[in-house]
Amino acid sequence: MGLAKSPRTHAYVRHLCSLGVADATVMPDIVDALRQMVNADSGSFFWAGEDHDISAVYAQKEEVYASYPAYAALRANGHLRRLHGDFSDWMRGERQFRNSAHLEPAFADSAFYWEVMRPCRCRHVIVSVVHDGRRGWGAVMLTRGPGRPAFSDTEQALLDSFRSHLMHALRPPQQVAGEYVDSEQGAAMLVDRQGRLQQCSPLAQRLLRFAQDDTLPARGPASLLPLPLQPLLERLRRIGSGAPAAEARIDISNRWGRFVWRGYPVIAPADGDASQFMLHVHHQQARQIVVARGAHELGLSAQQQIVGLRLAHGMTQRDIARSLSVKESTVIDHVRRIYERLEVRDSGALASRLAAAGMQVGAL
Image (cartoon, rainbow, N blue to C red; front, side, top):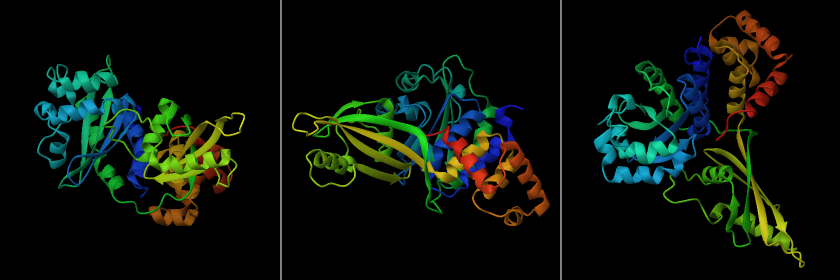
């Protein structure tokens, strides 16, 4: 059975959408799971604000952010409205765009393809608008590169089948993220005493974007340390001069997760006052998301994921049975199979095993 038809992957997406945490926190995992189900190369999600315009963007490919100014220019001159309808048209329900294959050959000859899609190494695209019956609140976009086949109507229908679940994920969070755990994403940048960026890797630039919650890049890469990180720079300057200062660390929590920033002096002249500083950022994610990802990565079936995640979050087997309206013996059987599969003996070990597996994959 192909991944696109895997019940356990479907269950994984449904569970992510029902966690009740901030939508941006969980969207990277949702997009990646949808990408896998239709065998796409990359995925993105575009949020719509009250004005029906794009308010935020999550893209797996960094090139999407680099091409965004070109995309905005084509929106402004009406090119996109003539080609397949503008984003705001989709959100108002006035136009609909689903599959680029239905627009050929105009799509391949368009400025949108040559100035936006091609620089992102994307040739084919499908879109599904998430709406509540009155208006759209966002759109998921999946792409394939040159040399790949166009998306089929069956693959489009599969993507569309998750719209109601995505709408549930977009609702205001029902709970705070709670405990955070480290992801595999960390990066460093070099700044001078005035906060000018001297060196900044692509990953560091990406994490900086999400830490600022600035995902509509109307300009090029940042050249100055953003305002939220200025206190960290001041602490480093004070530490370097021997003045009293708090720890050179700042935690920034927002809808994308938690970003832990630490600073270190790099160059120390004879007077002992550093002239450059290394800033390191580490991305952390909500434990609920990491554990859910681990259950999927370890190959648990749809029912095993449902039972295992409840068990890992502290529910008793009796409570799980009640919540699922099944016999307790059924839950006991699932738990036995889960323990055997993952080689654990209790719910605490299960939670640790799932979290460890989830930390190995997935991030912004």
